[in-house]
Length: 248
Image: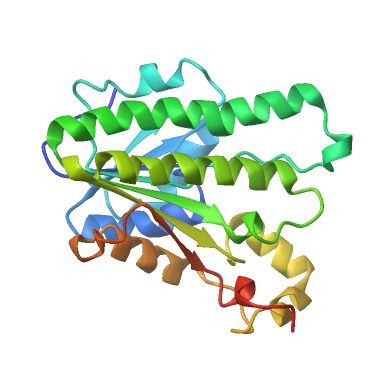
């Protein structure tokens, strides 16, 4: 159960990822209480270690998209209302389409699409009562330029983009807006591991470098600001120009 202290609060779904941990201190400095989700005790320990300089200025909650009861257990839509939702969460399943395991495919879409829809419904209803809210979904430029094996990942991202876009269409008149930020290569988390193993990848990017987590967090912070409210029901791409043209 999350404590409600009355201040504006931001739910960071996938709160153990490097980008969420980079964004959280920036929110705190803006007087916004970040609520970071974790799946296991190791994830909670990672959050607490990363935010040790900010005691009592953030909260954590166990939440797993793969757990069908997690949404009701973690979030009481009548009492736990968020001004912001920033959605970093995404399961990892790579397979060629023709070689995918049918049970894993079903579970993957149940977790990353159906469970996300249930969460959005719950969070949006709280925002409707508050008459304001901002939803940000972190997508990937892989939806435009998938590598072999990323078909299921790209499909789940596109389905999630559609849900967030429709939230912006359906709820803007009630003060709730939504935006999608498609990211290219980011030197954080799994992206860092991939880039370290494949340094030539950045040669494809007009900017000639990957994004760093600080600049991504700053972009998200802007999208959460009042000045970005008009960026609604749409998708922005932040990939250094990777998807803008042919490979160079």
